[in-house]
Image (tube, rainbow, N blue to C red; front, side):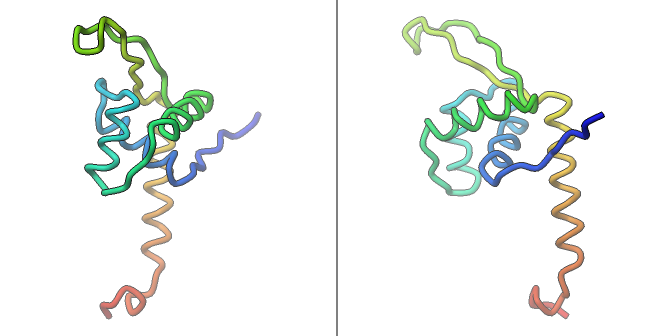
Length: 112
């Protein structure tokens, strides 16, 4: 049996966490805007869509079509949500980063 890899690139990690934060309201432009608002990083929309597609192929997010709206000229949005595997990936990344951070000597971090 193949063990699932939860390794993510930096942008994949950011996009996955932002989709989780936005919960049922995650779509391409909103994810892009939230990355800018949360961490001050500008990401173009094509990069966000590429990462969302990649995360969906990895089964970390799923997508569905939302309702049409007048503000979008009657077009529907493709919304994303984190899957159970995506939740596991977020937990794995969080735990791994914390484990590594906790091993850094305090003198390196400027206190101790």
